[in-house]
Length: 125
Image (cartoon, rainbow, N blue to C red; front, top):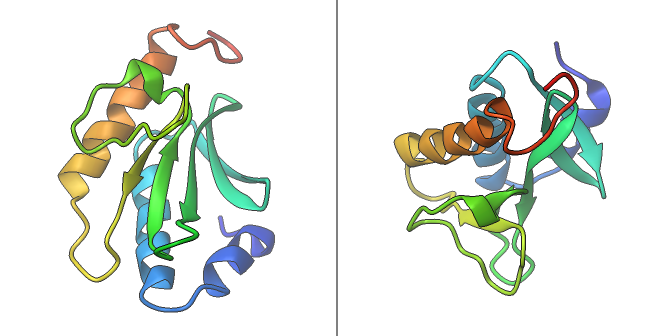
């Protein structure tokens, strides 16, 4: 079900970011029926069993969207960028090309597996 407060973030974006971020939102929400969307720090935040697992945002310099994975220090994927973050990593997305859906789903499922396995504690795990 759509939430106007959440929708506002996406609808306020210029193209092609708007379409790209909406597609990423749909991909994230389709990964598991226990994934929910909220807002944290003004960003769309996605939780698994009420525990934050990823965010959507745009890079300040390039303006391009990215997926910020919360517990990514446990994830090893060549497309994930650590930068100077100790816990989180990002998956950059080029809004001018087709989304690498298999890569995105692989990263999301690997992250969700950390929560499902109990490696990252959630409500009810």
